[in-house]
Image (cartoon, rainbow, N blue to C red; front, side):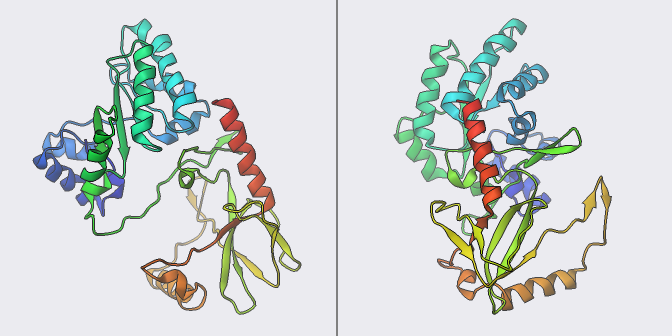
Length: 329
């Protein structure tokens, strides 16, 4: 199965890449237009955003099963595969699908130790009487990763392969995807977080401001996440949290900060004109020439560009993370 058309280099690459993969032996695609144009079987699963929108994993699974009772494949790694995802999937199979005379088609995992998790999941499904439920995995998979997983006895029925097929392996891909950060509720935005066993996949929740912090020479020291509307006063030492080393007591001193966030669309309407291409290019060049350290621009082993947090924002994230873990434990 070919996933990840979002990683393709443009729309045509996604569509015609799916066609090329079908010629090479892939048995389906998640790119609907490719299926329409070339009669490639189309299938897919739910997105993390579906689950995060509801805020309740079981509720999200239940709604999905009610809409797609004949093709229910549940994504179980939004919060915790073993303690939340699979128990909720089994509950949906029993309480939603069984009364309809339907069966849970499969579960999907795309983060964590896939070999270990697939074996644990297979045992849990079998114990629940779901021996016919398939296990699908999707990640940065290539032929070597798949062979390695199978050699470890992974209980995997099918693979969703994406960027390693739809892009040239020798070329880098943009290592980021969109996740829901907040949902409008009663005139306010309620924060949402995506939890993962891979630390880098845990999202930064809620509405936020992003400040660039400069030293006295005008060079960028770091970027700083703050709660939207939070005051950031650099006229005195400003304490911040390094999320990779939160135990350290650190402060910005003698620095200035600029809010990078700009409002271009509100309530579906444009609030100001978008910059011209030459303006964007000039802005980027100015940053690279005068703000961002050359050591951060190396292609090989670049220095990390620091992303820090205000104490208030760090507490918001940790509180939501704790609450989500508690809710889905």
